[in-house]
Each structure stands twice: as structure tokens, then as C-alpha cells.
Image (cartoon, rainbow, N blue to C red; front, side, top):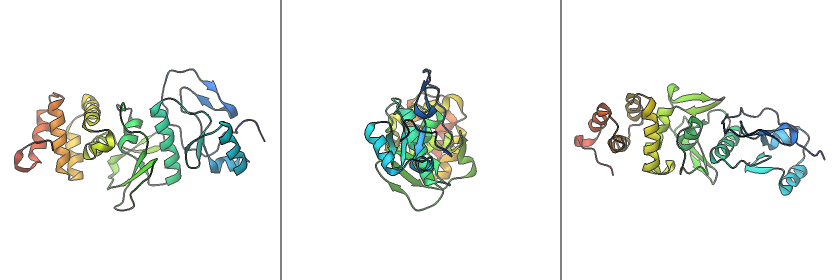
Length: 243
């Protein structure tokens, strides 16, 4: 059996994450440092001549580390964001066309604050009404996706920044709670016009999002009176109460 791994073919594009570390060579010509380590899918390894026994032997010896079923890396990174991006890439490759990185996975790829976020599961959304599911490493959401809800990040489909903020406000437990939702919202408002959030909230049609959005804007002491007023207009009786 060969000592090193040949580079796997037809992998999804790498999500580039600058980390300021020196690049160290890995078996088979992989690198770790300025970009994520190589992700090897079982199908690619088999195509390169590795049988199932070879793959099991590489796993037992520690040469390969599983990321998710049928996807491995040669050296597991210490960085939580990089680990999550690898998990997400493996999930996207498995799920195929139509899967869009969303929620905390989109936050990672957009470079939003991720301290304290639950990154154990990759989150993706499909533009359909049914078929959602959850397992230990993947949460599949189903929801309408408009054309401008989706952007490309290094070749992968990802919910846009405002859609990601609204999704996390819609289900804060998936984004680490209200505190982390406030950090992500604050980062967005530093560089973007708040009116976009109102538009995306209207699409979702959930008044609770506007309760949370208005409350957090005031709690953050952001000077966005028009945004708070827009939230009040969309809450029953014009009252803004965090539930």
C-alpha cells in the first residue's frame, strides 16, 4: 500500500480562511495553514485506488480522521471555524444540488462572530416545504429561498448576510441564544443598511423576529430609530415586548 495519499479529485472548492500560520506539508501534497486541510471523500479515495480495507487501515493508524460519514481529513485542525467548514463541505458534497449553507454555517462562512455558537452540526436549507431532518452532524432546513437570499462563497451556495441574520433571529436557539444573535446583528449593522433586515423579516412573516430585532437594536444602543419604528409597526398593538 502507498505511504501517502494522492490528492482526491473533484472535491468541492476550499473555503479560504486566512489564519496566519505557516504552511506545513501533509502526505500526498496537502497543506495546512492559509487554507483548510484537504478533504478526502471515500468515493475519491476509491477512484484513486484505495480499497475499503485501505481506508479502514488509514483510519485505525490515525492517518485519516473522519469529518462525517464518507469524508476524511489527513490532519484535524484545532480551529472550530475550520472544523465546521470542513463538516459543511462534506455535507454539501453529500447532499448535492440545491443545498444552501445557512444559519450558523452561513455565519461561519461570512466571517460573523462565532464564539459560543453551536458548531457541532452543519446547517443547510433547501428551497422546499418538506424534507427537513436532523442528525448528530447535520440539520437540514426547508424554507422558501428567493434569488437574492443566496450568494456564492468560494463556489458554495450560502444564504446572504441579511437572510442569515434573520434566520438566526427566527430560531435563536440554533444560533447560540439571544446573546450571540445580538453579536451577529451588531456586526451586520456596523456595515449594512438596516432596511434590508425589515424586507427579509417581512418575507419570513414571523412577528417574533421583529420583536427580537427591535429589542436587540435598542439593547445594543444602535442609532436606528427607523428600524425600531418599523419593528413596532409589525408587532400587534404597536407594542414591542421580548417574549
